[in-house]
Every structure is written in C-alpha cells, then in structure tokens.
Length: 166
Image 1 (cartoon, one colour):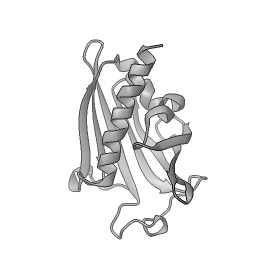
Image 2: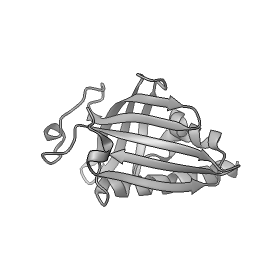
Image 3: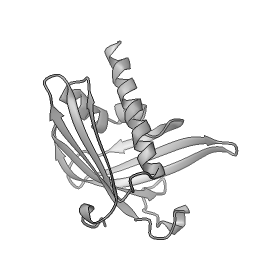
Image 4: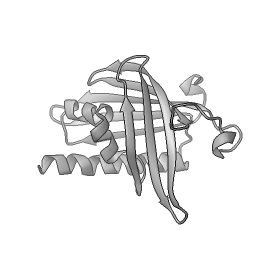
C-alpha cells in the first residue's frame, strides 16, 4: 500500500475553476463527467466504474492511439475518504481489466515505481468558484504523470466551459 505521502515525491497542483463546488465534485465522482476530461491529451476513457464510498472500488480504462493501434491502460483503486464537496482520497494502481493489481515490472515501469499511489483532492468553495488542490503521492513532480495531470486539468476546464454553454 502507499507509504506516508510526505515521505516521497508527489505531484501537487492547485487550481481554481469557474464552477460551483457541487459541480466540481461531480466532475471527479460522476463516471460520465470523469470520462469526459480525465487523462492526458489524446487519451479517451472508455470505462470508468466508481463505487463512491469508503472502501468502494474504482476501475478506469485509459485508451491511447498508437501506430500499432489502440493501447489500453487499466487502473484500479479504493476510496479512502469521501467527504462530499470537501475531500476525495483514493488509491491508484495499474491493473488488468478485472481490477487485479499489476506490479511495476508487469507493466513495464522502472524498478522502484510504486505499485500503489494515492490521489487526494481537496475542494474549497470560493462562492461560485472552486479551488482544488490535487496531490498524487508517489508520482514525481516533473514526471510524465505530472504532465498528464496538467493536461487532464486543462481538459477539465474545457469540459466545464462546454457544460456552461449548454
């Protein structure tokens, strides 16, 4: 499982969005909204299953187009904290399509890459706007994972803008 998040590298992104906190919460917890924005540029999310309760599981498939055809990456995890409109904490591990956790070597990741990481999202209501602080413990700042989160949050802002235009 994850070690103390303070004991190793983490991606920390603080960002404000022009959306009420209830809508921001839905972006992270409603599978249809989550599928619309999650992942780096070029990725799609064909599967997002979320049992949103402490101890509940999640299973997400990220699809990337490659010259050899579509590549699927599966992630599973467990919700550790679910405080509506305030805090969401879950673990994340690479897995197979059935949610069986794979080791770093099974997935071609370098030795020492953690099998399980932890994502913590703090939501702050700014009176119609929302500030989030997203911490992904176990993913080094400056890594491809950090770049992926930056792209995903830009996609989230665009998805919110599209929702407002409806």
